[in-house]
Length: 162
Length: 249
Image (cartoon, rainbow over all chains, first blue to last red; front, side, top):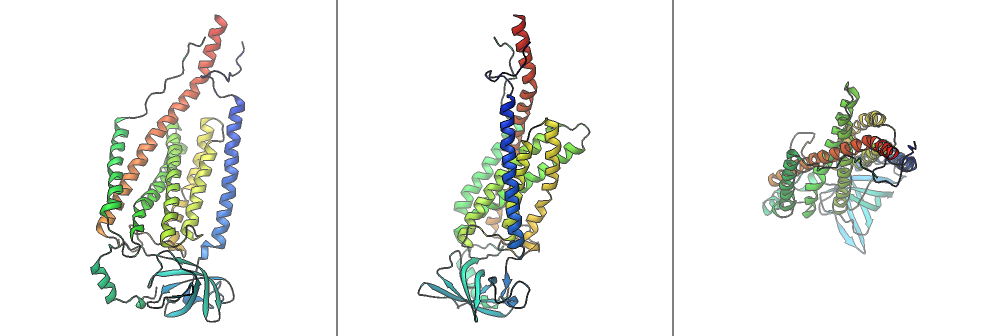
């Protein structure tokens, strides 16, 4: 009696070739996943594990040397933002150390005074020339209303040191 | 002529799944309406904060899904009977978890573009989350590699038990390393929830709604898997019965 699997019948079990094809599809998926995992781990080790230097650490912490490309975190100093000729300049403060930043363009996001940002770029003299700005926001969520604006006026943000 | 039939596929709904479905609809209905119309703008982020009502619940539900996968896998490995029900729950939960994790990454990316000014950065939270997502895609690939259901269950259980260890790393990545991503709001390190009342209510309702949706999806999916397993198991018997009938006619 012939008991080889039939492929034409609706009720027949999957033919060996179809099963093998399906298996190889998953093997290919696994190869892609392992490659992606390797790439992510390399990004973690080179970028994520030490994402930024604080303003006060420039030149004093390993990995935050003045002559290399840096990612610098600090709070935008109140009243320091000015825009001219498509350039944005502002100051960053952290632990009472301040640095002037110049950025070519509009930082975007929710960039504003008193907010912590991470600026990517290089130190040129006393000025940090940034070509990328990322805005951090806190884990605090408050409803926008008139009362809270007056509260913020009572406590100026320039007192924040991060 | 074929006379032997495979077991007919019946519906996979039960009273419990219908209850889950209704609860999920009500909760997610509130998240949609409340999140868009009743909750206020954030003082810093403006309307962008509304993405939080989807982003945070989907992240938590993905964690829940992967924990369920881990627990079900442990139950399969440690149980004397090696009940395949545990394996199916583990697989179904991982599939739903991967879908929720994808939603988390997409919604987070959109939120990041509006607030941070960029869709993606290789910071600790985003990098570990991407790794978690890829790990569970790998888990699903391992499940599909073939072999008997017991072989599938054994190897995928081991992967699930290793993969679940990544969850604390992802959650605490914002505390362990310097991250662009903010710290947790509800489970904040200092235990103080700094969130407006109706925002928090809508967020927690979202967590509840997505959790019930997860229960609804997993209940259905694992029942479908059970039917496929039963169909595969009976397919050979059906084929042999057919041939025997052909030979005797």
